[in-house]
Image (cartoon, helix red, strand yellow):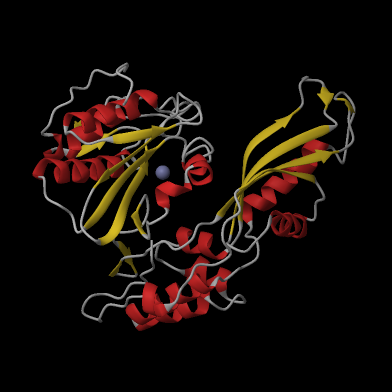
Length: 383
Ligand SMILES: [Zn+2]
């Protein structure tokens, strides 16, 4: 079913299910930097592996150079399980690399390369598992599906977004999935925990345009677009937006408070008091970036566009903001927060908003599992 054409010379064999590290190295050597992604050669190669193991699959593509692969190993009557991951990676330009990002060098017990973490390692593990099932001819308790997608790093319009919109039948019976996050341990305040993702922050890309006094740069100017933009960016860079506590975050921090030593427990409880949240985050010794992101909308300036002549003060400057919104928040909310925080009134344009469900279903009976104190407590959510 896959096109035979491939630009990659990694050998295809039927014992790779025992060698996930080699699978990972092969995957890394496909330069699937998004944009443009160009994932076809990589997806085709995975298809050839499946062919070699005698496993059927289908590909689905909105853009022919960016296919998505779906395959199933039939199991018993148990609930189906989906293993899914993406093979595109973020760019490598303008960065210093110890080793060529696409050579997949092994050194000091580590594989070096773009995608080792996000998320060709995950894809390699899923593939190895899936191929092992095929090789051992053992029937799993329920159907096991493998989905390898393109275009995750660019928003998923050619990947999962396309599949969900155009081929929802693929997911009709699937309640359980293992994807990019969750299932790994995380040490929090000295306690081993297993956070499980139940929802996502919503991508919200904004363009903020500033207008101001312009003219020849040989004269003094105040109130310029450049100055307004700079002041806006400086504030956004150094201050937080308001606190938002979702029910899922509340349950997570309550569970953490139960699990950690009393001093840290107090901190986790205080995090849930919006009056104290930011002070607690500043005072916490543990890794707080994730907590910070869970409890606030964030806005990071990523691209600035303005001015095209050395001696002309531009009338207009635009800054691109990658905002991530807490579930339940809308673009208008973060725009209002940015205006309030910075005291500036740029003209905002919503470039992209990936709206998600406002809150996760946290019904305890189905989704909430607590371990005993011996097994450190962790908030467990349905994938
Ligand atoms: Zn990823």
